Length: 212
Image (cartoon, rainbow, N blue to C red; front, top):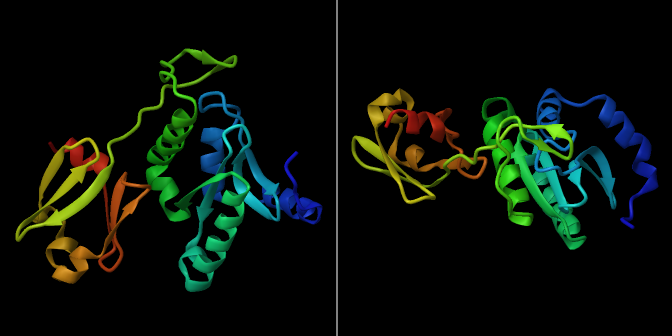
């Protein structure tokens, strides 16, 4: 039986009653066994921590990180926390809270993909039932693995081997950015989008594919 700190029980209950808007949105997409029949719990005490979402049968924990998690102290605490949870045999998936509203489909796809690796089976078609509940098929989106800039364009390399060439003039903020600012990018949700912090630019892979 999984150990949990009983002193955190009341705190967990309070957090469940006061979920953030991003937590509510993700919860609406994973609750009631919507993903492959897996049961998730919210604001659950696991060991000495309260995790945002917890799936016991898949040994999976999902965390939504606010801005404080990207400060030096937050990064340090998350590292200690993740080491503790992985030491208990869990996998921890983290997503920035700020990205939930814009990239909820991609985030849910990524969670689904992880569950699929644990228990592979064909996705259900629309209208089919899983464990007695109607659900929709989940489509895993294409993901980026690299971004390469040229003088007047840039290329996005996808995990499936495809490349997307984009004129840089389509994105004025990138067009006016310095070479160093262009290189300072990171992936959103493990590749469903790209974010440039210094110029405040976000591009989804889905939108790029729609231009091809």
